[in-house]
Amino acid sequence: MFFIKENYSHPAFKEGMKDISSAAPGIAAWGMMIGVAMIQSGMNVFDSVLMTLIVFAGSSQLAAIPLLVAGAPLWVIWATAFCVNLRFVVFSAHLRAYMMSWPRWERLIAAYLTADLSYVQFVRRFEKPAEDPQGRRSEQAYLAGNCFLNWSSWMIASLTGIALAHYIPTDWGLGFAGVLALVGVTCSLASSTLKRLSCLVGGVVAIFFFTLPLKLNILVAIAFAVIFCLGLEMLYQQRFKPSKGGL
Amino acid sequence: MEEFWHIVCILGLALVTVLTRSFFFISERQWELPALVQRGLQYAPIAALSAVIIPEIFMYHSALSPVLSNARVYAALGGTLFFIARKGQGQVVLGTILVGMAIYLPLHLGLGWN
Image 1 (tube, each protein chain N blue to C red):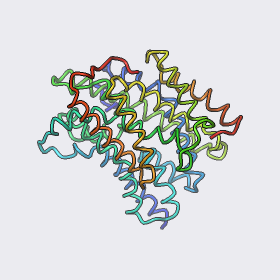
Image 2: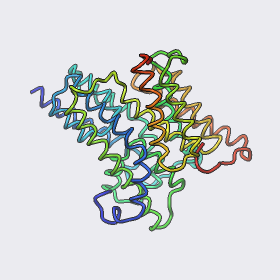
Image 3: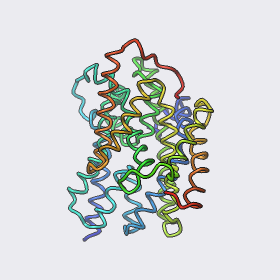
Image 4: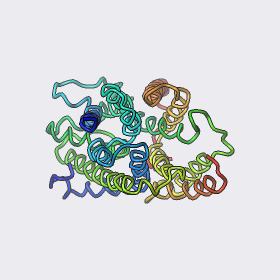
């Protein structure tokens, strides 16, 4: 990860930082709102800082905060966070082919630090896992750089949010900047007709199943979109030619 | 005592982050995903992002919100058009955020739209 010299001295490290830097203000705005939400929901400063520093998962924190404050049983809180995080289980299946050759502790640390945006930018930059050691080294360095900047902007913003919680009104809607960052990254992923269809299907299905508990609508949406696109791909193998560079 | 349980709870949540994010590569046992699944996963990233943002944009308090007076729809649309106009070049995600917020904040704070 980013504290290993082979990673931070590699040119791909900077490339990873550059890719995420464009979305960093959105990540920071979203992180700050999570910091504010923890304090405003009634968590104390120590718990909020600890949660920020070690949990590092915005949506699962958001789901856990009210439960923690209400004194729900531990297993309920953990199970909720697990379900809200299920999309990462899907991502880990995807990342497995890239990461299996790394030592286990490096895999676990890298995975822990790989949030949504780092994952999507990583698999966008490296569509196929490398087969030679140099290629794997660039992959590792790119992910390290990307995660490093994502992690630091998130931490700084979230801790700032905790410190300034009483001065930042949530109804200004600053957190929407986080959604807009994701809009930008989604556009950059939409590089083929099938991927644009996957986007459309995912969005519609997520609204349709919005009332499912524990954000399970996201998981159902991924499943629908993947199966739908695979089906189309097999039916019309020749018709969809990918283009470069997003929308 | 309550503080102790809070700390245990937060430690557990950190463990959940590690467990979910590394789920399929904790074990070193040899196995391969079926080729079909491997291919299908290329459609997962964009579907996941879309599943997060589309409800955030079109829904308000768990219900579809009227599109015409929805500041988030105009903001996301403006951001997307900016992305297309710039053909995805340079710091375009930053531009998407700035253009979107420039549309969202006046409508949201000025006109009180959601």
